[in-house]
Image 1 (spheres, one colour):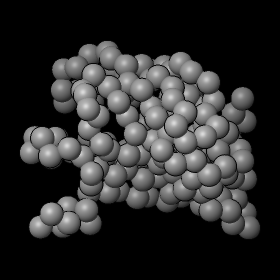
Image 2 (tube, one colour; image 1 turned 135 degrees about the horizontal axis):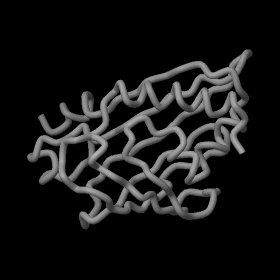
Image 3 (cartoon, one colour; image 1 turned 90 degrees about the vertical axis):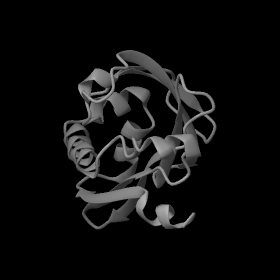
Length: 162
């Protein structure tokens, strides 16, 4: 049973976006880009520099009230890049007020195609700490929210992200 949850504790959604991988990756490596494409409404702002490698970090200013599920109010999280392959993949973990971190991972894979890029967004909570698994609060973000974020990502890239 220990490995059974690993099969279901992950969402992956894909969408073709009519843009080159570099234009999409530019949004995904910019802390403000994460705020710009967030469909949950929780990401209010971010501080930090564009990420360029695994291990890089930035801070996201959150407001959990947007989900209406847990009265956390405003708080900050540190995003730590865990996978970084330019124009191909970026993933990160989150460290907030909970120590040690919970252990969930968000990321994007980019696959070039003839008329743009297939972007896959993923959310993996298979390695969350046991005490969080027992609370039954995961997933925090729905599969539908990942789909929404991909739609917003396409809109942001089409409009010419800074």
